[in-house]
Structure formats: structure tokens, C-alpha cells
Image 1 (tube, rainbow, N blue to C red):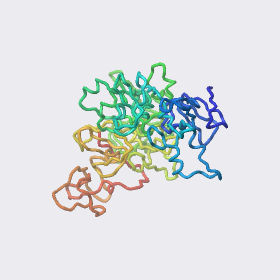
Image 2 (image 1 turned 180 degrees about the vertical axis):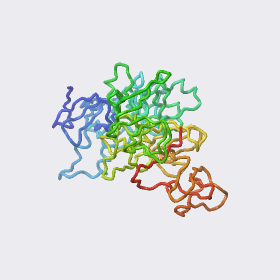
Image 3 (image 1 turned 45 degrees about the vertical axis):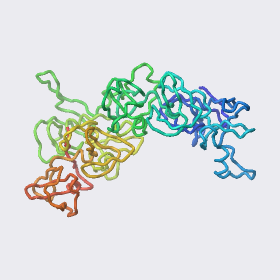
Image 4 (image 1 turned 60 degrees about the vertical axis):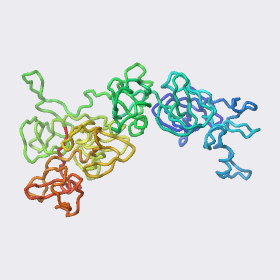
Length: 513
């Protein structure tokens, strides 16, 4: 264990931590730490994390911007008390600690000349910087100027770090981007790349996380095995980033999928038959959700619901005739644990909700259900079977183009209902977007107080100026999807077609491929 006794935290030594899974702000420069760092493992609340380079800064140095006197490393957060022991006013502190190079005031470590009241932020005092994703060292330009960063593509005023051989201008904060990361949505590691001729020759690229265009002139994260591309900000968003210890993957095996061994299955085969092509069909199984064995059925069954996904039962499925218990074949073969693009932790399958009512609200679509549930043992995250099986890329009958799951920090608007959320299925060709709730609406449905089936419609049924729901009698938006009984000219909101809190097995059938 590598220890460092640091002047800012004399109570305990700092421990070198090579684990790259945790994002923390450096106590020295207040920029994000993406890689190995020093921290205190004895303090419960504040662990004093540092970049390795910030923790190992010299206590004093001579700098070419102030060659006449030595500069001493100084902690701004420790020493602003007046003669009465009270914290100094911010105005005095701001004037006192302004950096002579960037002309800005930040609550961070500075190098100070006590003779001349000369101050340099530690990030401004660095004479050379090394980025993990670039072969050459970067040299800070000793002047604050307007420039466009060649990594993040953002324009602004600051002190650029220059690679002269490559004509590369980089923000200091961008130089700390990790060379490789792992996102929840992709099975392989992503590597930071920039200035690639391969990308420059491509007319358009889309981020696989937010489904928005990527400017390939600047930095991006890329998987060469799968041609997977993602924005820097999207990749490092805590909702998308998967924290893994890259030290465990130094052998070149980048696949970090969980072990899906036989121990993760939810059923045992009791009997099977062999088809003519040599494949086997399990005709009788024991499932963790039911006390009796379930038999294979390949015939239609009316007015029954699957106890797993709560949808209408359809062949092939397994059943216990004695108990009227039914499971789709796909629901019977769900794994005990699985990963989902909306959550960083593995999800565990439960055959019933642990809540008092035995129902739960699905995180992705918001519908209540009392079927099987995928839940996180670490967080309050619950997903129904239908949404757990919804693919990242789907084709929907309500739109001509393919839709890709988009996860962003910004709220996105669903075309079908006008609702806003962070997760939608987005079209790369146009501005069309669907949330989980609307993406899984059925093509047709029955309403308990109406004798005919309703059909899902994507545009207004006529050219009238007023549009109402005949169930709730409230006005509806003509741009939004609705259900319609053509025989009775009877339109209805989708939400009016379903009970808000189903107490029996009830769910909708999907409308995607």
C-alpha cells in the first residue's frame, strides 16, 4: 500500500488508489478525477481525494513567470481567518488570491510569492501536461486567449495546452479525460480518439447514447470492434458510465459481461422431446415462481394472462391447469440476473413485488404491474418484464424509420404524448421520439365499458377543429396518439383505456419489432 503524508491533511496519510471506477473532484484543483488518485480511507465524510499529479506537487518551485523569488504551495481553504478567528469576507479573499496568469479566482491550491503577493493556480503553474490519450506532452500557453478545444470542440477563453507537433489545442480539464471507459449500453470498452481520418471521411455519425450527431472533427469515444460511437459528455454522464476496475482487464479481454451460467436460470427441465431437426423442446419444467410443474402448450388460450409479464397469454407458453397459472415461454426462461441500459447495476428477477400491495410502478414506462419484477438490490429501481425485454433498437408501426434508445441529461419530448423524459427512442433521420410508455402501446385494446375494440391511431381522425376523449370528455391534442373505435366514431386517450392501479394480472402487448 503506497502512502503519502500530505500537508493539507496531517491527521492521516493518503492512500494511493489505482481503482478508476469512482469519479471525484480533486481537492487540489477542483477538477474531476477519472483515474488513479490519492485519498484518505479513514475519514468518513470527506476523503480528501487528489489527482496523483496534484498530490505529488512540490511544496515550492521557481517559475519562469516569476523568477526572482520562489513560489510556495498554499491551500486557500485553510488559511482565510482574520485576527479575531473569524472567516474572512469573500471580497477580501477574492482580491487576495487572484491568479496572475488566468486573472480568475478559484477556491483551489495556489503557488504564492509572499514577498510580491504573486499567485498562480496549480493548474496554471504546470509547465508540461501529459494526456493519456495523446502521445506527446502538452505545454500550457502563458496567456488567456479565445480558442476552440480540439477534444471537446467548445470555444471559450482560457489557457490552452498546446501540442506543437500535432497543432493540437486542449483545455486542461480535457487533458484528464480517461483514455478508455465502459458504458452500460455497450459490452466492450470505449477508447477516446480524435483527429481520425476514418471519421473525417464519414459524412455523418450518431452518438449511440443520445442519438444526436457527433462532430467527428473533435474527440469521441469509440469501439472499433462494433463501430460504436459516443459523445464525450454522454459517455461520462453518471447515468451511462459503468464503473469497472480496468486493472482487472489488462490481459486484453475487454468483454465485461456478467457470467450467465446455468446457475442464473429460473427453471429446471423435467421432460423434453426431440424435434426432427435435432433440437430439444422442454415439455415440462419446474419454475421458481410456482409450486407445481408447468407443461408446455402450443395452442391458443382465451381470456388468460401471463403471470410473468401480465400480458395476454399466447402460444407457446407453460401452464399449470390446476392453478390456472400461465407463463409465456420467454417469461419462463428469463434469467435471474440481467443488465439493462437504463441502470448501472445488475438487476435481480423477483416473481412478485416486495411491496405491501404486490404491485409496482415500472421505472421506464410508469405503468403499474403485479407480474414479475426486475429490481436493483442497491438502488430503488424497478422494471417490468415488458420493458426489460424492449430492445435498444426497434422498428415501430407508428414511424417509418428505425428508432434507437436515447439517454441524455436533458429532457426529451415524446411525439406521441408530449411527455418529457431522459430516455426516449429517437430517430436518426428526423426529430421523431417515443418514450417507453408510448413505444409499448398495443395496436388494439378493449375498454371495459365499450363493446368494440379500439385501434391505435397516429393522426387526427378528421379535420374538425375540436378533439375530445369520449371516455373522460376532456379535450385532447390532435398531434398526440389516441385510441379509436371506427364503428362508433369513439376516440379515447390511451391512459383512459387502462386502470391506473390494476389489482389483477393486466398489461398491454407490445407494438414493436
